[in-house]
Image (cartoon, rainbow, N blue to C red; front, side, top):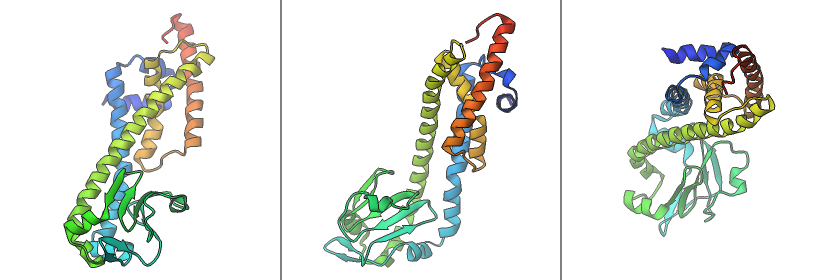
Length: 254
């Protein structure tokens, strides 16, 4: 399959980049989407699969991660402030006060997505959630913690929706990163004396991202500072290769 041949050339052979840049835009987009979707699907699936095995006994999940509460005047009542990390890479926060926003205190020491429950609302700025507790109480007839077991089906559907949202978000984020990187590289190429078009630099950055995509595929994403250094180093050798190619052919392919 041409994808794997191009991946080999993109990773190991800088002198192949002038030829890679001649690849049709359609094939390059397919190449990018193949790695973006594959890496994101694997990367995002892992915590959901792990959580499935860890919390498939829903009763145990409720018992471990949801504190006791009571209902008064269609409001949830907790005995104190709780911050609980879950295997879903989501931190549950239960605030006894009606602080219906994600505060700095909520964010402190939290790297996961935050899902906050207050007496009147369930909110998450990251997941764009803002639900009134009273409506859930009435619809599902909740009066105590044990009644949450009845929400098992809803939680399952919510996990599926969350998985789809994450896939879409990370995919769009990766595509946006490629586009912005291509715009930046147009100016970097000028430092090397190359006349670079946006489309050529988009193709280039797609191929340069092959290793980061593969690392993400095996659940080892590059930290940002390493990623930037890696891209700059690769660009240096690629641009030198393109300059040599241009001298040999007496044409400017960029």
